[in-house]
Image (tube, rainbow, N blue to C red; front, top):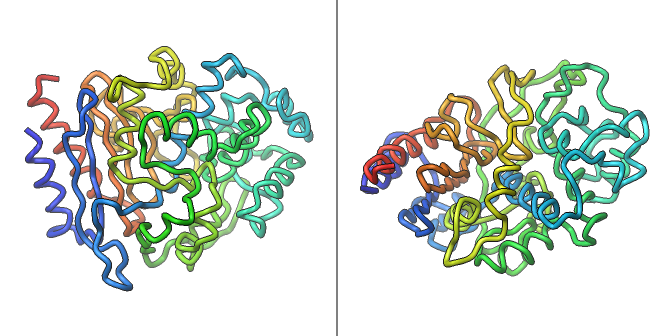
Length: 363
């Protein structure tokens, strides 16, 4: 029943010019699809193999969300609490009423760092900038995607509540107990296994820049030098600095919708809280429909997360997809190293084939 998924994966190479990629699926807590092929490093010709690790960009937001939800589950915080309750300095410049749920659902009106990104890999410096920054005055900024600032805000929350970084917290509470090949900040001894990211031409359209539209420091010409640097791999950016195998991310989402080898960390009730819709509408910059739970992207009907009505998860820049279809008992992850801008059939084709395969199981 999963053969058509393998066929779709192969067609991405023969028909869509895939460079290197992996796709994995869990069904009812069991690994049923584990595919990889292509070139992990076009510069050296190193092949993509079973152990290749990949930068997830915003796919990292799923694991970071799980860390926040575990603190909720343990009674250490509530989603409706103001962030400033745990980080008093954050309440400056009229931010005292911004809640944790607002941050998780991209409603904090802090989509950029006004001071710039010279200290991109310095967590303490970036949160110091955000603490004194005023929210964007343009009301539309209340539903602008926060690509990078989202992670600094939530990492600081976890540090203040628990004492550990998001990367350490995830390793201790999720990756270790569940046996996940997922890291927020890649250990140095694993850098050799990382795929080399390949950037497209014309990655950034020039301004004019406004409060709603400013250059993302990781989405500008030459940014692949940052993506592929040892410093970036180690930094542990909680929004965009996660690394994984597709197998590891599929297992992570499988653990959110059921037991994996008899274990799970978040209860069903906690995951349902994370999937509760907090915001829907058109993202002002993209003009595309978005629905957010507490950190998770929810089904919008455009195929981004497949066709399951209850789909949730989080995509990553350039094409990757990670998520779950609870009613079908499916969890999946697609990772690739050639970043593409604009319409991209690679993940859509895989999810369409996966949907057909899942229907064959009777779900």
